[in-house]
Image 1 (cartoon, rainbow over the protein chains, first blue to last red):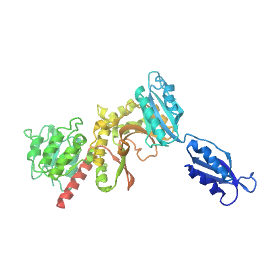
Image 2: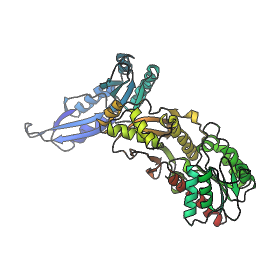
Image 3: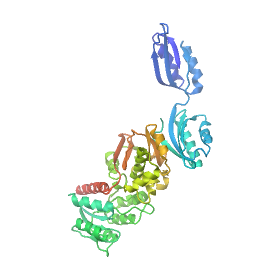
Image 4: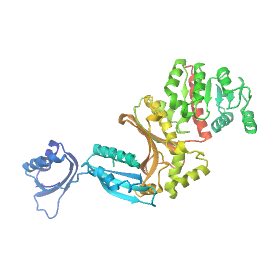
Length: 163
Length: 328
């Protein structure tokens, strides 16, 4: 989120304090004086992880400190994993395979690259799955393993658990 | 120290050549192959036996057998290097138990008995106050068992990951490097002598899984079995899959993985960054041990070969000799 605050001592701390109060995790604080902003106002960008339902509470807490919230950008799915699938991917209903992940609400297939060499020969596909967190990724992977078993596909997972 | 050697395949012969060529303080007093045996408490002339085996196909007296050597031979350590039977572990397991019951130490390269009967062999050995060592069963020349038992003593091992099968690693290396299909790479592996006529155990991940069982039981002593391992081989891999991985600066390797806290015990092809320490080329093996104090330790080395396997067996033999000499 992008905040605007008075350029005076204690203001930044006052703006950050509510984040921990609502159980958020600060990933980065970018603190830059912008040229087109008048002298006594400071623009600060904060990258943080927070449960979505607590966002409203955070905004009102920050505002109560006299800090303006200018913009909030949401990237819901922070965890990313790439895997490769081999088999009759198309003919075992690729749409359904992707849907089984997408319909969870906590994970999505965000990229798919597929190579189909010839009819009746197994295809290979690279999938990128994004999820809210690591636990959700493991759950999504579990679903995908089940689908692969049922459709006789091979899933090649990365060795490291998350990317 | 006196040793008896069972098995005159490439491992047994390689071992005899090394023992004969080096002054290690080891005297071979008994030798047996599948057809014959010989014994001499003053020490067998190894060169003559190797020559005889080469010329007539058996090593000694056809009236004698392995059982005679084991039951009547004058030796301190039985070196069991007969071919692996991964289903029954016999007759090797029986040979070992007989020797242990006579108060003899055992050194083996034979995966079957260790994977199948680890607990019973160990308890019998404890009862008779002898050692059963099997460095050569996993990772060829890599001293993984010594590292685990001595170098990393006192550490809690959290996980092991490894490339434990050289044949499948060779195939994957060639598929990635030259864009070969699985069938072409397998053919090449056969021509190079890396793959057997029936490559099932290697390419279906069974050999790697057997080694993972041995590693797991050595580390965690939970008595896991081959059937507990979740196995996917490499025989269904396409070169397209390799290319899709390579596009992302990654590659595919057959990884054996044990993480008991997460209930993971599996062998499967996995995607790894090309710069990952486990990404070794051709027939090399690699093992990463993740521990609480030392962190991660990765060992890389030759996973097969007669001289390499001899290295592992001799390491075990000299370890036993060392303990003997100190009077333990």
